[in-house]
Length: 344
Image (cartoon, rainbow, N blue to C red; front, side, top):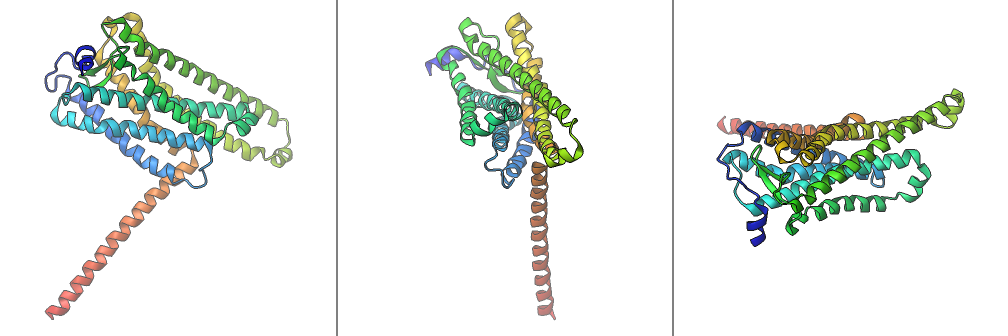
């Protein structure tokens, strides 16, 4: 507790109610609520897809939708209470806990996207290695390590190598980008360097996948239609194009939401505390939350199995709801019929 009192300074300076602007708080709460609802539906639908239990790519997608659901589920209650009170529910320990949980699940989601991109890279450029060496057990271990890695990083503030802070725009707790002591910048430097390396690696993977597809299409163009049909090139090409399209859109959404978030952190570290603008930082954080909202929409648009599962889920809900309404109506009509008989 002495550490929390003297080192962290989560909430400095004290903020008045609605000092950060109610519109920012409302935006954060709405994005988290919509993200929670969409990811909840997507989680149920993705888990109901049959015959994909041993599919490595499907396993990574299931983990991604679970991590995206965890982001909104862990922060939505605090955003709702803050919205009702129009201020942060005071408490340094609570600020540390929420910041730890939020940054852990955000980092997990980003790392799962990296693993999805890596799996596609190996499947396309090194198919024999992918089939023989990349097993479901190893993919599960990689996904588990992707969760443990950010947890290990975010323990650093307990050792004084980082700091969490309350931001009044939206009333959320996250990493302090302008700490007073140099050693407290260690965690910020680590996240920026690792994020940059992951971003460059994903760019390299996508470039190689595109080059590989271009080479395969050029080779298949020299074959006759009969030879292509005999080699099942059309079927394989259609399957690979579907997975590649899903991967590219996920990566594109990742770049659109994560690169501004990462770039702003790097800019503040290079230019110093004078470059920090809380409004800009709020929108970069909002973009990171928006990424978890957009990911499930990507699955539905780009993959027919997930699209069919979503349709079946809504159909089953509609049918069960209609069945309950019809059953209640029949019960009511039966009651009315019996009452009329008694009256007669």
